[in-house]
Length: 593
Ligand code: M6R
Image (cartoon, rainbow, N blue to C red; front, side):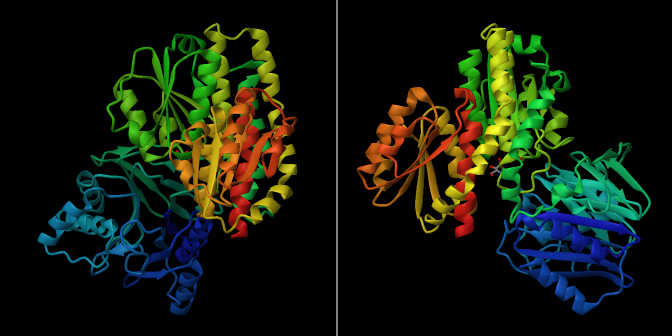
């Protein structure tokens, strides 16, 4: 995932950029580069591989101190990882230099136009097209602002840009559409960044630049413009994260740290909405009248957040008897969905910036369907554009493999289910009280699961060389399997699939052979025997079985080769506990590899 940092001010831009990019290293990258304004023009320095290589290169060059520059870490999308494809990209005379996150969808068409106008291209990237398009309009108009806005009108896709011009050595420009970017103001200068950790050492005072907006930064001033170049006012926002949130705090990786932060994240999210034994959604804007009127709910999200949506469907339908459809955002937005009256769309997103989820939100709003977003990042695009926002209180999630945000999103689903069921007369008050009391025990129970991590670490280390891992379950356990499998493949790079346990025998079982690890998730009492019989089926093909269930279901040991138990809880809440061993499995298998 690419990272952007830009700075103009009294400090050494080179230092600020390298420190900022280092803070974004956790997102992964394959090359890095910076552009620094110098007395005689702009100097671009790039390297393939680690940031330390770029740092050494810059040390060797010993450039005179610069007060303005842009930097980037690149994760290849258009073209292989190489110095040529690395950002910043620039015009041949280095008069315009640009870094970019996002994807320019019509870059081929724009490139063809620019080739006809005499431009030459050296890289395979869409970003080189962007910088040359800005240059094309700069040559026509002579002003950076107009050049950038006219380029923005031509570009389709998503972007966060940082741009510097040789003719404006003390200025830094930024623009965005559907790709995250924040603008910061510190004591000694102004900054841009694609993510908060990059500038947290410098400042907590930020502005959120909106879609199709441009920012013009100098050492002491920041101005914002819309695409018509009319100036717009923005309020500064104080970032609430404490600096420790962006550090590993003694853990080997952010993922492990965040797995351990789950009890607190869950507690904080419950605490924000459960007041004196009642659910209080006033902070979200969502009223009981609205919830009482709902005849259908559409939950839309991507990846892990979509898996939360699957759990949401089971829980809301079971408790509130409201039909729920769950869709991945990239499907929903392109399939002309039917949205009925008295319905609500729920968008789940940690970052609040995921492009497909944002597009799904806009589609719902175009159809006059109200949108509730479940979002972790305060002030993000999805939060801003929703009718109601239920913030999760996971704190900053640095690990790209989500854990604690996922856990807090589950809490949001339970709360939504309980309150909808209550106001629709499907749950009586006593049951609500009992459910909320049980929910409040989840943080302690998650801590108990974490206390057992060494056993999982030992088991995981034996599977570092696995080629395939299957996760099976039914109902809510299937949704848990989906997330367990995603965690496994995302970070260990081991092929893994999640199957509805009853579906495996319809073809896919042929992939299960001697020694294939199959993890059966069996937290639901009424489905336990059913899934167990599927475990027996795969065992007859030689599978090695890990069973995951609640304490007390010890009969699993007659079938499974290795068993993991989590504390008992309400059937609706089992995901919150059962997911933790699977997160640890994914993490420890990866570490062992
Ligand atoms: O920020 P979002 O929740 O919208 O991100 C959606 C997915 O990209 C995300 O959940 C992804 O699947 C996880 N990071 C995987 O661990």
